[in-house]
Length: 262
Image (tube, rainbow, N blue to C red):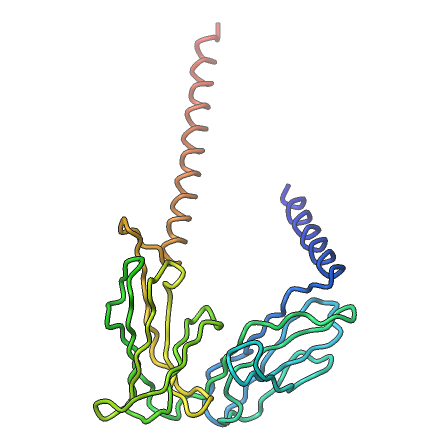
């Protein structure tokens, strides 16, 4: 049984991928930084694009803006899947995506990898003017502030690179700040957020992370961490019920076996 199940899962995945390839659709690749995507000035970094084993070629782009339809600058094309940056400089920061070729067809683009140069300026601060524990449907104001005069601030969600808000900064209390708005929040918006200071389009040092929790009407936390804990608790409870039922059944069999013995 321990061998049959993984084999069936592998065959099912292979069949699904083959069907998608025949229909001209490929799963997007995974783009990652081999060390860290937040890099000190003059330090090296490597970007990796991961496709299936039969990949024929890769392309890695630098995206000018966080919208898939905007301009892309091709940085790498060929069989290699890694792009090496020897020294981190301001022009190397930004958004990166990649794709791969298989069977003569190109895949869709990967998710966004945000490359940031850190240690250059004091990091901004991110705070919630509405608190960090929210009720579903609340409107939230989040303030990003820096003592350094950045042109703009970029607001992102750690596990959702596509979620990006950018706003110009305004002078306030010997620094620069801006306020980001999230209206009618739901459980999908619970998570970890940061803001980045930016000049023109390139992001610099991020703030410390800010964790937001969104609770439903009955007061239950619906953050991702609590969902995992509830799922594990349910699984443990199910295992305990099965063990108790098995113990009761074994005890009952033993009892009736003794009574029927001569």
